[in-house]
Amino acid sequence: MEKRISVCLTFDFDAISLWLGGFRASSLSAISRGEFGRVGAERLLNLLHERGIRSTWFVPGHSAETFPAIIERLAQNGHEIGHHGYLHTHPKDADDEAAILDRGTAVLERMTGRKPIGFRSPGAGLSFNMVKLLRERGFSYDSSLMADDFSAYYMREGDNPQADGPYQFGKSIDLVEIPFTWGLDDFPAFEYVTSRAGIQQGLSSPSAIYEIWAGDFDYLYERIGNGIYTLTMHPQVIGRGHRMLMLERLIDHFAGHREVTFMSMADAAAEFRREHPLPR
Ligand SMILES: [Zn+2]
Image (spheres, rainbow, N blue to C red):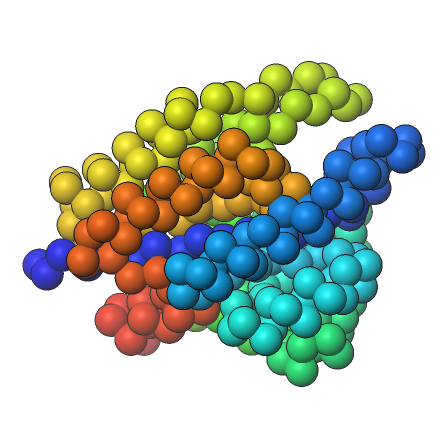
């Protein structure tokens, strides 16, 4: 098989919504960490522009409305804008899921003139019901699951997660999963957080994370040779100076292989569909 690697650089622009939603923070100090997301986003936009890289940004409706200038620049520069909820929370129930999904879509469509076709669940909390909602609303792909690493796959409906007997897999549906993993995510690696849930140490040295992130890429390139490499980053995290330098080095490493193409997740999902039509 021909060697071919798609690199999807993805950025979750959680900004303030993460601190108000996920962490239910009330201090201005905590909120300001999310506000730093604007600084990080501007640095990333400049870097991506310099390198001619098209990327995917998953944006909560709350962030889009709070930082409209960033959304405008993203759209102008041709980056894909995907759905990442409204506030960065886990929905309470099925009705709440539908309401959040529709509200986030309405915000992004109003601001960019386009409906998002990709979804990433805030905090990787995708539910069985959400898969059905995404299919019903015509989404092309999701990027919240971890059942593979470098291969996209079709999602399923009708799984039976019984514990007293084998897990039962449902039917594949026309919704592509482009998997992500916490190991290729900057948040647990770098972000120091104290919350009701405990302490997340973070604050790794960038060289340690470079070793992990480049190591996964090298395995894909050398041992598998064909697939999608996805990084998940947050402007408020990766946007710090020493981490930006690491990201620049990493992009140089990827770009040093002629079989590598940087692409949006929407394009990667479309390519997967063309090459692997869903069996009827
Ligand atoms: Zn997020």
